[in-house]
Length: 130
Image (cartoon, rainbow, N blue to C red; front, side):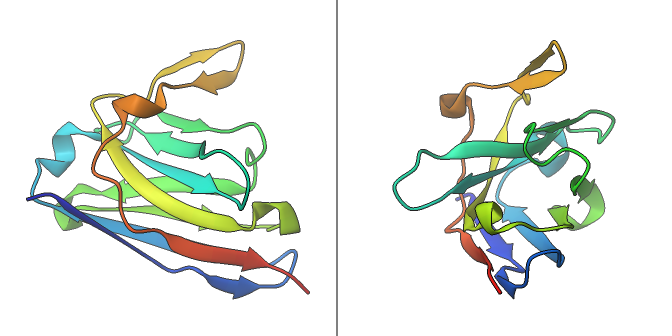
């Protein structure tokens, strides 16, 4: 049985930083792309970032480029999201998920099919507020 567990959420002031982690067991971690999504109240779930199985390719939503960094440690079955310069609009429940691939980049923007992502974690809350 595949299990994904997120950690690292919390309350932070605007301009602050947080590091999220997601450990996945029960699947071949280094054969899957790993991603972060988020969902704010009343809004659809949206992709934040994705990293290829090798770590060579990284994808970001336009809204987080230059502020967030995704990484992975295949030896620990864990991937991370380093979030800097946080804004109130980053407030959401953050979820990790796995897929065969991250999607595509066209004209500098990342495009994905959310139904391609499986093995969702339970989420970790990130709140950015003064």
